[in-house]
Length: 314
Image (cartoon, rainbow, N blue to C red; front, side, top):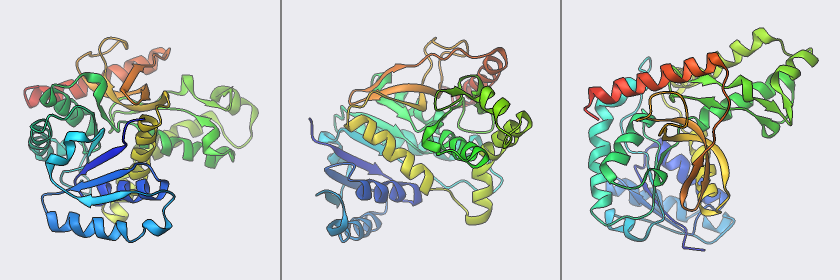
């Protein structure tokens, strides 16, 4: 196995929640922190190093500069400005697109040949920008997509039916934002279709499904209203994606990937779809048989993303 080296660009709440979860789960051999405020990156590295005696594995942690990407297998970009209360993810675009361009330019200047994972919002748009600016194959540039949204969905369903969320298999697809939707037609509890669960259990009714969707869709806004930002959940989601890559798992995760014609919607966008991840990046995107309503929602979501990309001439 190749050396598992991760470079995190951006040591804000998301970047450091990811780093902290990565250390606690022993997710890599080497971790490098990069930030425009180098002193903060140095301090964060020191703090993490002081907990290594309690970590599950030996790790090398330090602050660094863009030269560190030369031998990294994974670069995770969390840099960007924070989402304000009442601000949609799409509205963040103009403030974050220029940051993404600059970051990717610095990465590729050092002949990076690994995988780029984008977590900065709006993630689908910025993952597309990163792909275009990097020149890397589409399989090696991904966004966190709807991985956190899907985790929120599994949690909400588990609360209704009192089943472990790890036994709930359901995806949020589309934009990581207001146009996302639940793929109820392919949702299962264990091997049991969700529609059969609703029919058989007193704890949940079909009317509850829309309540669940709205709670998931609006979760970020509710958290931001109370604590100004969300970061723990996405930090853990990024670790799960990292593990799928480094452990060569061929694991299916709902992430932001290029739709190059597999789904019947706008082709030239990055959008949340289930994809098989391994050490080479995206092995392939999984095609789900969507019902007509879901096809319409996916098309709407893709069109929103394409319109946004058009606004910045991509």
